[in-house]
Structure formats: structure tokens, C-alpha cells
Image 1: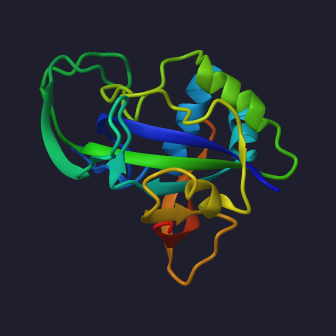
Image 2 (image 1 turned 180 degrees about the horizontal axis):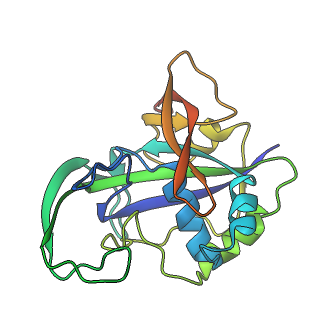
Length: 227
């Protein structure tokens, strides 16, 4: 039976960057593959220049993400509702550094989107011949080398990442997510959970000298309330 690591992404703000347009920096409505790989890479202590290890990590894991309508809180016997509000923040930066290292004498303006009061549960599965085992990833999530954030550095965690300290077993990623409340919510899956609602997203990082991304197909599912 397949094994999965279960992550809870819960904090005051999250931002999962998608296509940027210079001064407009939107957020995807759910965690991107590039963002999740960056989160794991930070915990593992992988350097951005270590493209071989980053590629190996990317080839080792598959993600299934559920958008949660509520999140657990210590000492509370019910789930606290989550609104998933997207808002844009206006930024100005003075004395910004240019690519050549010089200082820009003009202020840089940008509009950046953030998700407020959002929560996600993520099932991480292992791909065949994985270089990074789920056990190694779990250890790094318990003792991260670099500080993990929810997309951008301005978005800290509101709780520990791991829902369970070790892997769980389930028939598939959807069944793995169903073991943790809330038991319903929109699910975005890659690889194993095929549905009749596919969509395409350009969030697969291509590690190298230039920052590039490839496209992947994901499938939408609806998590069902357990009886």
C-alpha cells in the first residue's frame, strides 16, 4: 500500500506565486508545485545552485492538495472556519538594486496578492526510484535547515508543517487526505488521481541558469464527507 506524508499549510497569510507581470505579482489560489518544492528544499537545506539535488527532489515526489474549509486549533473541539480571501497589497521600494548591482534612483512600485485566512492539507507521495525518501523529507520537516514559509518570506507558518510525525498508508492520495478533517474540499491532484476535470498550470520549475517553468496537468476532485 502506498505511503504518504501529510502537511498542513496554515498561517495568517500565504502567497503562491504564478505568472508575474513586472509590477503585478499574483498568487495562485492553491500551493504551486514550484512553491511546495521550494518549501521542501528549504527544510532539506538544498542550495539554489545545487540543481542536481533540486532536480532529484522534484523527481522524487508527487503532490495532492486539498483546499480546506476549516482548520483544527489546539484545545478547540471543532474546526475553525477558513475564508480564503485574496487581497492585493501595494508596495513601494526605494533604492532597489538593479541586475548590474547599481541602485535604482526611482522607486519601484508593485501590487502583490496574498491569501488571507487560508488553509491547505497536502499529501506527498513518493515516485518510483525516488532519490529523496519520504522518511528523509519527514526528518527535514521536523528539523528544517532553513526557515520554511508559506510561499513568500513575509508569510510565516501558523503551526508545524507535519500533521503526523511519520508516513501514513492509504489506497491513494485522496484516501490519505480523507483521514484528516475537514473531509470535504476541492482537491488538486497530479499523476495518480485522474478525473474528468483536468486543467493545466505552468508551475514546474526548470532548474538552471535562467528561471523557467514548464506546464503540468492536474485533476480536480471533490473530497466527500465521511459518514
